[in-house]
Each structure stands twice: as C-alpha cells, then as structure tokens.
Image 1 (cartoon, helix red, strand yellow):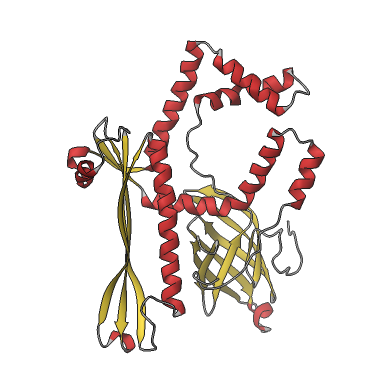
Image 2: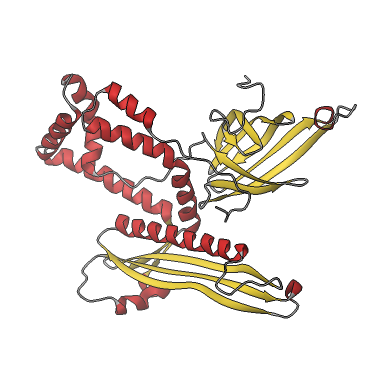
Length: 368
C-alpha cells in the first residue's frame, strides 16, 4: 500500500532518504547480515519502483525502474533502470556511492534496525528477567526502584542450585559471544604476539592481555598521473598491550581502540582530499590511502592461548551501533525515567522534547 503520493523532501516517515529522493519499503526479509527489500521511490520527476534491494550495516544496493514516458517525456513506454551501490561511512552516518549513469548519492537509513551483538548479561540480570514481570503483577503499584531492591534481596537469598543455573546460562552465553568474535584460536606458543608477554610488567596478575597493532600508510604521487614517481608515508602506526581482568573487558577495549582507529583513518582521507594534508598539497601532487591495518589479539595467560578478533565484525558492529544511536538514546532515556519512578505522562512529555538529529547530506564521505 502506497504511503505517500508525491515527493516529500527529507520525509521522516520514509525508510531511506537522500537530498534528492525518498524510498518507502513495502517488503523486507532478513538475509545473512542484513535485509533484502523492495518498494518504491519518490523524487522530483515522479515515482519509481525499487527492486533487488539489499542493505547491511556496511553497504546498500538496489535497482530502480521508471517508465521512459514519465522520465523523458517520451512517447515510448520502455522501462529505464538505474543501479545503486553504496558503502556506509561512520563519519557521516550515511551510505555513500554512485548510480548509473551520472550521479553520486548519500542515503540515510531511518527505520531499518540491525540487531547488535550484545555482551552477555550477568547471572543476576538473567534472574531479574525471569521474575520481574511476575513481581510487578504480585506487587501492583510498587515503584520500579522498590521492585529492583526486591529482586536484589531475592537474588542474595537464592539457594545454591538456582544460582548455579543462572551462572551456567551466563557461562554458555560467554562461550557463544567469544565464538562470534574470534577469527581463530591458537596455542600461545604458536602465535606471533608471544614476545609481548616478556615486556608486560610482572606486577600485573590479570588473566587476559590485549595486543593491538594499527597502521595507516599513504602514497604521495608526484606530477600528473604520478609521472615523476611517488613517496610512501606512514601517517599512523601504533602498537599497544593492555592487561584485562576479563575477556569481555578486553574486547570492549579493542572496540574502543578500533573506533578511534576508524576516526583517524577517515580524518586522514578528509585531510588528503581537502587540500589540508600534512604535506602541503600542490596541483601536481595527488594522494592515495593504499594500505591500512588493524589487528587485535586477546591472550589468555591461564589457558595459554591467543584469539584473533575479527576485524570485519568490529567494523560491522561499529556501523550497527552508529546507526542505532538515536533509537538507543530514546530507549535509554525511557529506561532511566522509569527507574527513577517518573509517571507515564511525564515520560511521554520528555520523549517528545528530545532533540531530533539534524541530517546533513554530502556526497563525499569525508565532508562536513
């Protein structure tokens, strides 16, 4: 069913928007890391069908078709198709790409939510999930803060057998979480990072050691088309180790460092192509990021093994979190207000007053 009957610029009710068009999805279905979809598009020239759509946290592609008579005021009724391909930028929070035959585009995802990989919940939180609604029913009218205190009291007095049940569930979720993130696991003696154990302060008794290597290199080409040769630059290179008490904390540290690495990489792209590079840019010089690397390993000193963390999943999960920021802020605000025992009317009013993020479209991933 068609939701709109004309082009609405930056329509908040559209599923995907750009500065030139709005897309309304009529069907979607999960597939692999994203969703396949179809629907229709409105732009200043009219309506088009959208087919063969596929969107993931990292990329987007779809086809649009329009009757030639509508698009070019022609007498024929031949369909004209355009193919779109784009990739997500964490800097702009937009998908950037090109479509045939001429133009660049930037697309904002407004409604498709990608499920994120959540860190395992503690045994007590798992227990709370199981009993909270029943407690709420039994103690109708009790404040959320009071119900939370009741949960904590019941947890402290839980018998050993029931505690072990929730602790086992937690341990199983940790195993699944690690399986998702680990690219491969090797005995510590076979891994190249073993030398870093010798450099670690002996005062640290933490079980886990996080090792990270990151590097960004670029070429500076001299003369038109690089006719006068090129010079390689190390823009950014860093190697670090950090002890952690738990595997979950070690991964959280890696995720934080990866986000900073991506920011440094995108800032360097912006600097090189805006003319504000470290080496003053001249008309006969061009620059190209030709190599970047991020490698992260978690070393388990107790079991003497090293786990390589998947960089593709680090990137995918980062993109998911960035696309969910506005939605997550809303639900976090709702949760805090409920925990503080605000009444429903006040909560609704606060949510209506939350600022809506401004959408700035630019075709280049590095632009402001």
